[in-house]
Image (tube, rainbow, N blue to C red):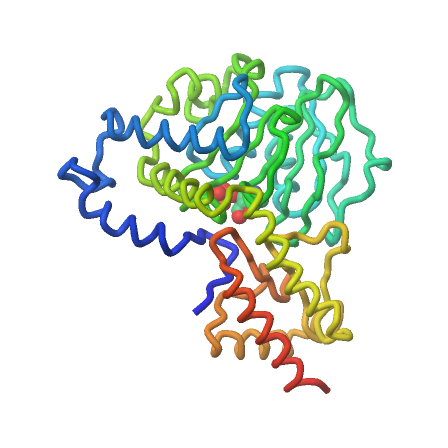
Length: 363
Ligand code: PLP
């Protein structure tokens, strides 16, 4: 079976095998890794090594703090404004899909939000930067690097006015390509999808942005409180942090984020090229320059998709062991999520299936 689900997680098989043993007993602790005290030296080593692996893999500069938080990406939709909005009371949002739209809506509870790239009926690309008007007085500029639902990905880091911190939601493409951390004020991502299981959200924040939350900011969403307490202000999601550490060790062993990027391109190009060569049997929805390397969204039976044809395609795929390819309920169609742990072999199975399915069902 190959599992193309967009969430909650895709974990490398090697990591899962290691976890099996650790769930029964972690090293020489005589207890499960699920039970190890979050105040113990053993857990201290887990969180420390997970942070160090992050610093190494992403070349995180010394003036950035790494936080392990709860509440998922949705928690961060609130945490970002709660911690950064007090700078000037207003913020710019690039709305390129459902997740950035949700983030902008949440932020509007805490300050004035300007949708620099406004909400669209259908999200199929990113309008050219020349059409954006960014406010040099904004508290921050926010964007989502990869819109998981629509499969819209920004292929480069947006330019922002000098002095305005750039905030990025990397929940679905974190650790799938190298990037320059120093261009950002805050980067965050839920571990699920590319670097672990649900339950922990990593935040990378430039130190000078700490210390100025809104007075109403809850302690669990407060970057300053979390940083001061080394992510141990309250009980952290210990197991999820451990899984993240193990997945990051796997990423390093496999060749780092550079290798993850190479694989992402190989996998997504394999599927997009079949779509593009299918003569309209399959249709990619997103403009070529914004096509996601991790969530490949496409239609069967025309650009708008044919519900019956798509249902038949999905049914046949499921029979062949290609699971969870159904598009998000809000957009329909087909979505193949190709996260780091989804192998090239899995992708090739899907590619072969798409070719033979078209051959058998050509009108
Ligand atoms: N941002 C992106 C890009 C996502 O894909 C998701 C969930 O899939 C979220 C945010 C929301 O994350 P969570 O479900 O952890 O709150």
